[in-house]
Image 1 (cartoon, rainbow, N blue to C red):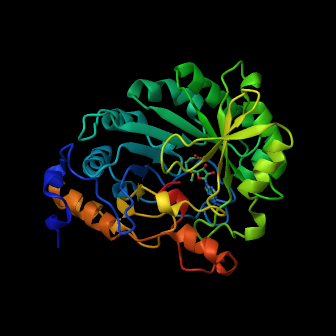
Image 2 (image 1 turned 45 degrees about the vertical axis):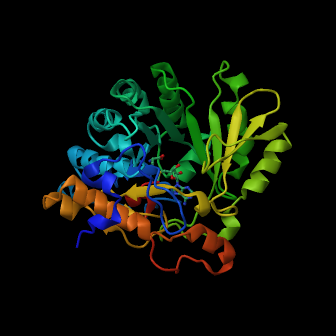
Length: 369
Ligand code: SAM
């Protein structure tokens, strides 16, 4: 049953007055960000995310009819925005594999918050197709881009991504994005002990401003996480944010800087010599559930309130059955107001007991990283 009373009156029918309070979950966390997975397919097979043994030739990806269409995504996005979302990140799978993705970006970048501010539309990509797409993405209204890259040497990249793609393809994609006018591009590197931790310093050196004609790129190191069920995650493969910072500090003096906003996932550091900024995302050792304001929409239209969730709320069925915008907004609000998940904090309290045999989680390629 749809519960309209779950939504403050001003927010029904997909609208919210400036004065209306943003909805909050049971831990008083507002809804601010939406990650949308636009495809469950990827052109890489990163061993920690979509290992080929599980996502090989026989893997059945979602059939086209099950994917939300761009119009359906935009309709749902409007409901999320009415409830407080002001930033949307497109992800996957590999979002640049979704045909005509720039058309979705154009639809979403036209949306504004109830207070009349434009919604920020961002995208995370492995950049394999970025060189060809960067200008079209910019022209469609994309605000920012994050690129995932786990090493600079072809050998490391091949090992991590289980593909024959050379690192140069990714670097060319980043350069094309810079030429297209994207400012503040971020590069995210997942660090896995014994696999690519020897690339921490070379990656830092490469993306420092001094090496890129002053156009430094913010490199963010991500602790390897126990997402999904397929990567065989083990705590001893996690290089902690603390250790990453110590290794960096032994090469380059760095100092801590303030977050850009409350709830920012990365802890920010700058090079003391002015050569730019780096970040660490300590999802394992300094869990940030307390400030988590993110909802996730899967490729087939399910709402998840945590990356580590086991169940999502199906929004596609009511959407295709003719639910009004008010009905959809009410469903989302109701689920958010019941939200009490804080998986990473609980995991931190019991890291030793979390193994890949813990309850079945959702794969990141489906829910969106
Ligand atoms: N294909 C796009 C990309 O490469 O950015 C978007 C999807 S990908 C799932 C999003 C991010 O999740 C990537 O930066 C990837 O490295 C990260 N990721 C995937 N599995 C992870 C894990 N087990 N631990 C930490 N980060 C992970």
